[in-house]
Image (cartoon, rainbow, N blue to C red; front, side):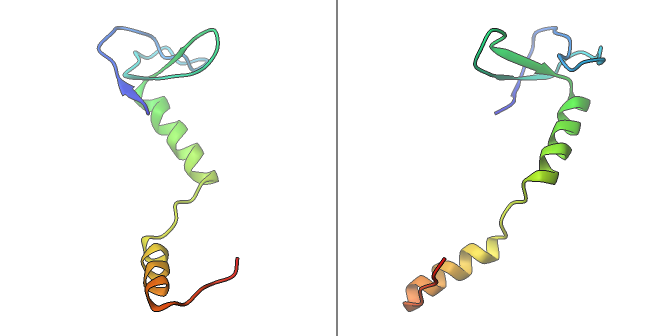
Length: 74
């Protein structure tokens, strides 16, 4: 989702004056948001607190349950 850039751009985060190392595309007027590596890490940490990835063990056990014919009501 975040693409590495070779252009010399400044990070779009308010108060940050670092050189951008990546960007991602959005809808609207700006079309692209440029981020430095430090702001990318901060954004990742912030998003990680809200979204927790599912354990691969859950997926494996659900596939095994399906093969054995066990169904779960959700």
